[in-house]
Length: 150
Image 1 (tube, rainbow, N blue to C red):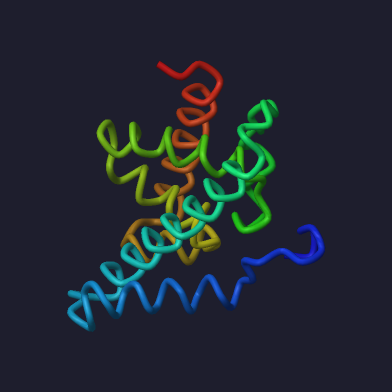
Image 2 (cartoon, rainbow, N blue to C red):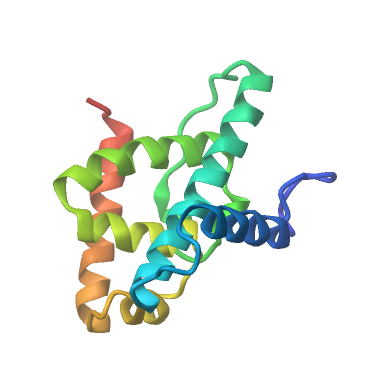
């Protein structure tokens, strides 16, 4: 959040609170296990961040800025991402969910929930090497899809 503009309205604490309220309102405490909870939390945070980015973009009327490369994502939490990048990743992620739901879930946990590779692999019951291979594939797939949307 340190890289955000002054007066940014979406703070990390507010994001977590909003995600919790959405989780509490929809599924209550009926999570099957830890993985189910983290998957639901990542999806809630994704939706909140994309909604926020869309509101911001609508104020700019689509400024026409070029789409941002995903390589910068690896070490930063998504809250610091530009609105254009958030929307581009969100749209491509919807297509990835159809093609490979497991990779899409890993991307949500890493990109939208800001989990480390170890945390995400634990949440998905994967070996870290398997998760790293999926992450590499997911980044490449998203990069290609964002550069050349169908």
